Length: 273
Image (cartoon, rainbow, N blue to C red):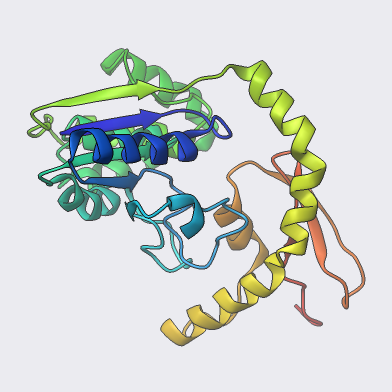
């Protein structure tokens, strides 16, 4: 059986999914695997800046699709689906958890993604980011039920590419979707109450050493790329990073504002770069 738990950031999906998995295993006697559908938690090393589910939070429940790629490139939708689908074939319950709607929909609806790469390239040429509204309008004409935000350009392009690539494949025989939405007011209140504490936690947890470790690991894996550049790093940490970066002296961490609340150190620029 397949169950999807879908909801916005900070809505409590992680804790609820683990509690749900425990009850299924205890009361129904069926094993549960949680399949992450988060487009940031797929990256290795980036544990803190992406609020990656920790081993303690997993509570002994099997989790998949976390830490699956090196932070050198963005995995495309078809790669994610190809790696995730084997985990859905289980005698127990597969629980898809995340806020990346296009990931969830691709798995639930059995999207055929063999030709999505070529379709995506064509769509990016026809609908550059300056025409994101036109791309979303086309998606709405093709699929009025699409769970994609109009401002999420990559998700809109992926959804359109999946439609162009061909008809849906075989969807899971039995599945249900659980929506978790405590409301914007609740999420805003939680964020404002814990924003300062969260900043301190992130700084104390030493994001900067983690970035350096990721850099070292990447250079070992691919010696063609020597250093993280700031735009690439920022794109990995958050899609809505504020543009303004306050530069401090070279011996200090450089800080930037992520999503309006979180301060994250970036890679200091080296002299002459």
